[in-house]
Every structure is written in C-alpha cells, then in structure tokens.
Image 1: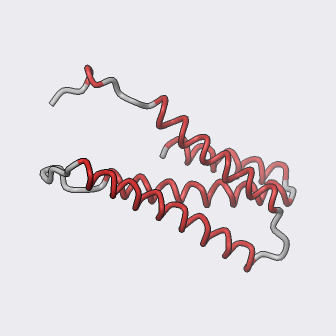
Image 2: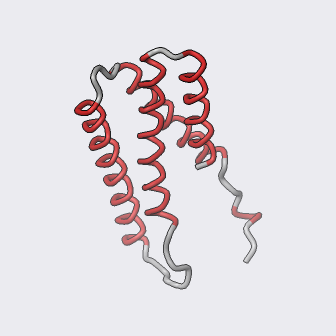
Image 3: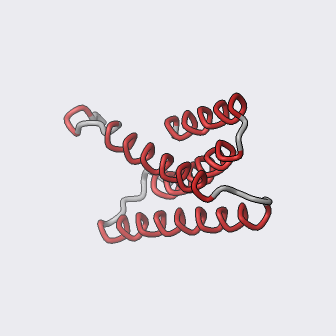
Length: 119
C-alpha cells in the first residue's frame, strides 16, 4: 500500500507542476487503481487471526477480492467518464496500468522468506 500511495503522490506532483489534462487522467487512473488494490488487500488480510481457514476458503476469498477489485475499478472508471468533461482515456489507462504494475512488483519484492517468520 505504501508503493500505491507513493505512485499517487508522484502523479499528483506531476499534475501540479506539469498541469496538462493527461497528467490529471494519469492521476485519476492511479487513484482508482490504488482504491481497487486497497480493497483487495483489505479483503485478503483483514480477518481474525484465531480463525483457521481451509485452502478452499482461502482461494474463494482471493477470488472475491480480485472480483471486487475489478468491479471497483470498472465502476469508478465509469463514474469518471460520466462526470468529467473530457477524460483522456490513454492517461487513465496508463495510470491504471502503473498502479497494477506497482502493486504486483511490491507484492513480489516484499515477500518475506518463510525461514524468517517466527511465531
């Protein structure tokens, strides 16, 4: 989530200092992607620790998180296109893709080796 927040902050600063319509669309796309990823992370990681889940229920929870993320992203993109005058679709897609790449890379690079986990 910290990487998502940093991406949105960088997009905001680029919009403030550059000031073009495409930078606003990139900022909105990154924000929408951050909200979707935030929901998925909340859905996966927020639960009582004393409850043990089976592999099937874990997989179902991951699917629900992913479907919810896609629904949030699709709904917010539709709202942006309905409410703004002329959003640049290319900038919105660039922001969304940047958000997805950042979240995937942070999940890949932020993994803790199993040997280091102590209880």
